[in-house]
Image 1 (cartoon, helix red, strand yellow):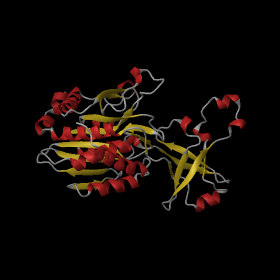
Image 2 (image 1 turned 180 degrees about the vertical axis):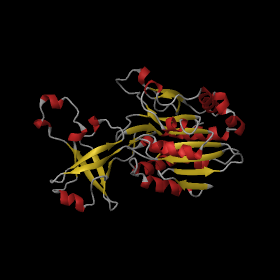
Image 3 (image 1 turned 30 degrees about the horizontal axis):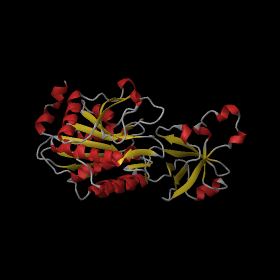
Image 4 (image 1 turned 30 degrees about the vertical axis):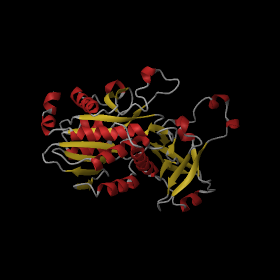
Length: 368
């Protein structure tokens, strides 16, 4: 199984559109509206819950349900103070590496809907002490300069406390089939789950697609959407750390770009994220092998996904994770291979098409 250039081009266009959209945690409106637009022609039902999750379904002929979840939100910033001189101080929304922030381009949303360009400023290096030069600047010392000269000018632009801020970065083609840009975590997972849902032919098992909110700040959307859907099995689709770069030991690579999607075994520090049932891992690997889909397995020592919250919903919901290997996570230059994205879609579709109600019905008993 090899992707055609036209198939990769289609995925690039979808991914490019999704990464252009701006939606930090709790402010996912742009992304949500686009997702609904794509889902309306192909869904038997669509609803939006009070946390802003989009939940769509293709109804199967049995009562069994598979849920595929991918989060809409991206990490970002939020205005916390505007100085008399018009500089903007901010707070993080989601996890950041402070060292990458100085000198980045950003966009600040006006309450009128416009996205105002700005840059993250910092004191010039010749004013720093030797000790300060050797340390990353703390986030609370950084500020955004939008070119204004007073607080009044900033407020006239529609910017105020609580205004969301996103990175100003576009999806860029690199060599071969690799691309880089912002918000691949998790717009790539969202693209894969959306494409698989659109392409899937309804079978015996109902297919539920959940585009979740606020994953980056506590898996909040997955917590409530999985409770209401109550699936027999859920798969989260997200990125994973591809640390296959210079200076990192092979044992710490986690996954490699271009080698196919990963099937998660465990994540989180000391397994405090999810420990996936061997039953689910074996089924995913079996489907990948039967369908000639290249794949990897992963043990991620830090970080987790929506599956952790889903697994703890109600009396416990069986959950697994399919991940897209991505370098430089939580930065404006996250990098992945479009072939890995393609094979993620194919694995999701193959898993759903080979899923039988009887296997799902007995899953919880076999896990015990």
